[in-house]
Structures are given as C-alpha cells and as structure tokens.
Length: 215
Image (cartoon, rainbow, N blue to C red; front, side, top):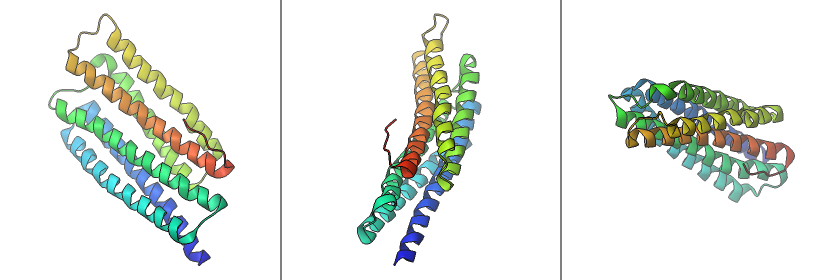
C-alpha cells in the first residue's frame, strides 16, 4: 500500500513539472507573438493554454483521490496540499500568457508593442521565461536557495511593470486609448505571471520548512 502511495506522489510531482513546462511553452509562444505580431504563434499559445487548463483539472482530481484514499499526514499531506495550490498557480500562468497572445491576435496585422516600450517588454518576457525555467527545476528538485533566487528576481519584473506606467503617463505618450489599455494589460499579465512563479517557490519552501507564507 505504501509503495502505491509513493508512486502516486511521484506522479503528482511529475504532472506538476509537465504543467510548468507547458506554461513555459505558452509564455514563450505568447511573448514572441506579442513582440513580433505573429498570429500563428498567438493561436498556438491560446490552444495550449486551453489544453493545460484541462491537465491542471486532471491533476487536481488525482490529488483529491489520493487525499481521500490514503489519508496522508505530516510532510506527505503538505506535498498534496501544496500541489493543489501550485496546480492553480501554473494553470493561471498559462491563462495569463494566453491573454498576452490574445492581445497580439487582436492587434494583428499591426504591432501590439510601441517602439518606446519594446525593450521593456522584451526584458519582461525574458525574465518571465527565466523564472518559469527555474520553477521547473524547483518542482523537480526542491532547493530552498533556488526558491529564494526566484523571489529576489521577481522584483526586476515589478520594476519593469512600473516603468510601463511611467511611459504611458508621460507627456510625450501619444498613442490612442486602445493602445494604452493594451500595453497596460500586457504589462500586468507579465507581472502577474512572475508573481505566480514566486507563489510556487513559496509553496516549495513550505514543503521543506512547514512554514506557510503568502506573496
């Protein structure tokens, strides 16, 4: 019975990694679609996000079944409770990336990124992809140092998000209202994507220490 339980815990971990890998792919495609006005990549990101949502639901159902049938305690219980929270974060990451892809799609064949903000969004996309790559490693190998590294790097995305507002609110911003809304929303989606990676790192810290924190 214990061997079956350990196999189920391993499956939960493997599925979390797979979900995070899919979220990374969605963000990669969505950010490239956004920066390069690539409608094909936007459509691919949107389709993958819908698929990842179904996979997250399947993982949640597996965790609930294990909780109901195995009655875990102590660290095993923490793993399963954290898995439910992390599954929700990863599914949301895919959804946020899909929103970025949707902006690119709606703007096509025009560009969704004004020249004055292109470098800012390039940096946001790069850091988000670096963060989710670290999250994938973290889910496969719970490393508190890597978790802290993720939490520290999130501040760089926050600074870039604030920079978008500074540009949009400046006197020389001449874009129309729709463009203004698009870039503010896109910036928020990139920023929230990073926040969810931080949330995952906090849950991994909880697995190791038993101390629950909210970000």
